[in-house]
Length: 357
Ligand code: PMP
Image (cartoon, rainbow, N blue to C red; front, side, top):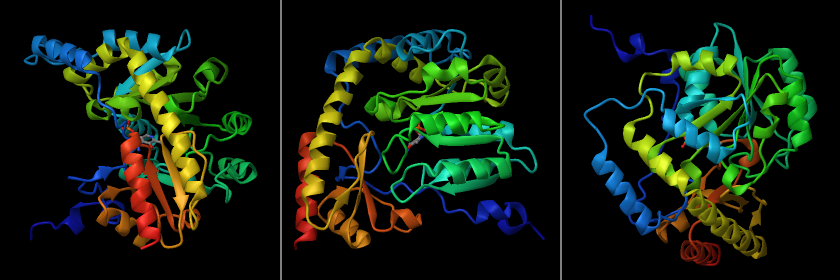
């Protein structure tokens, strides 16, 4: 008898639902925390030139030396720290978990947070401990420290700012988590461009800390580049599970060139932050809506019937993300990415129409 998927595929994988990416053709796309702005035309022309000259018949530089040198400058990586780059930060999370998934080891994170921490732990057959945030999405420090003490996780993942709540956790409390952890603590700074706060300068003080970044939210989601920064004794081990040539030539070229013009991304992040303020004010003034302040490029808000509001927005051509049903603290919550002024206006007017038909 040939084997069936039930025979071959592990139970915990069959129990998963695949990460769903909805069709967004023709929609105002405000569901995925992308930067709504393209690169300026002269920079795009320069990229076209560089790509024309690229040796695509050859494998990429396996050590990505030039890109890493540029990243060191652009990110202001502290002296003595090493870099590991991945096909998006998702791949870095995968490398971390794969390397640390000892038979009974736990991975730990807060809930609600970025779902891939839990998903990737499941892929690797690792146990994942989720510790609830408080009702206002702040850290429940006593509960968190108690869970760390009890489960002694190999890795603790904390997004700073957090997705989907958008807030920065208290830095002093995060320090207590780092100091109270026997294992690694990964501070995921995917939304750093919109927050301005970072644990990167604290790396030299904490031997068990790693900081993760991505270029996805600040304007280069299409090239997939994530960066993990920390001490060589960790990065050197993690590098062993990296697949050869994991960051392709096109990504290396584009990232290097765009980072040399980093002011472009900084200006776009500035425009997004301004719009975030306008969007938050407008949402907070809307009857029947409560919106949470955000340090990221998205805003979490609560309505009275999230599913029907989601559908109403979709019918009016606006795609946001519904988080209803994913966690107790996210009941009736939707998350909107900050778009261009026109996109945000279209979203606000679609929301007004949906709430007052
Ligand atoms: N970390 C957090 C907190 C995120 O929200 C996301 C994207 N949703 C990622 C990591 C993954 O980003 P990347 O595109 O670099 O894989």
